[in-house]
Structure formats: structure tokens, C-alpha cells
Length: 201
Image (cartoon, rainbow, N blue to C red; front, side, top):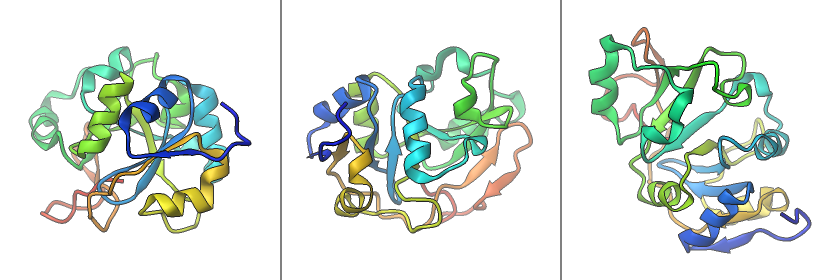
């Protein structure tokens, strides 16, 4: 990927999916804001995202996917106590902290013993995962401390120099970032139960 070139801006899924497969950094819409993403098994791309955002690696990353099976051997079995709640919430806007195996990359989980995962219902993001054959790292498209971008023009003007491709599709219209819940305890770490609490990040 040539980082000196302007990012590819396109409404077509396939070229953005190709950028993901090639190990690039992309921007794409979620329910609330645009996200920065890459293959979760591409450490150099994850490090680029951390550099673009100015985000500490210790915080870990959210991973979004169209199916949990894409995360393979990284996830331990879902806790029995909260399995029904997890399965009932997906596809949907709740992010769960799931227990992981030793194979889960440290760049994804940060200093935690869990991985933040969401099986998204956003149609463009689901289509992108399917076309790329991969889950996606998902962190809001902004530099640390700045407001997240809610459209592709904002992404291109503020972050375009560090991104390989931007999917020109609409966000889902929600206002707040996703609710986050711990799969082992059931505790709500961000957001709360209710019709407006669970929104994608």
C-alpha cells in the first residue's frame, strides 16, 4: 500500500474488501460513526491505526464481524450463564467482552484477558466482512480526543493520508457509541439496558 496516495473513495464493497485482504487500513460506516479497520490478524495495519489515532495499544481494540466463526481459535467457549443474552443480542449493536485463548493477539486484547466483539447488523459492514472473508478491527475514525467522523468526507479530510480505502456508505443513524457488556459477569461497562442503550461504535 502506498501511503503517499490519496485513499480510494468508493461505494463499492469489493475494492474496499480487497484493501482489507491486502493488509491495508480502511474506513467504513457503523451504526453511529465511521470506523477505522483492518484485518484483525494484520499487526502492521493495527499498529498503523494506533498511530493514526494516537491510541495506546494497552486499551485493546473492538472487533466486528458478520459471524463469530471468523474469530476461530481466539475465543474461548462462551460463558454458559450469559450465552442466551449474548446470542439474543446478535446480530445487533451490543459489544461483548468475551474470554479468549492464548492465541488471541495482544494487539487486539491490549492489557485485558478478554476481547471486545460485536456481531454487527449494519448491512454495509456485514457485506464488507463477507467480501473480505474476515472480521474487522473497529475503532472510531478520529484522532484521540477529537469527535468521531460521521461521514466519509470528514474521514478523507482529517485522516485520509493514513488510510488506503474509504467505503462511501451511510452510518446507521444512532447517536451514541455501542454499549459494552462483560460476558463473564453480565455487567454493563458502557451504556445500559434499554432501547437506546445499545448502539454501535
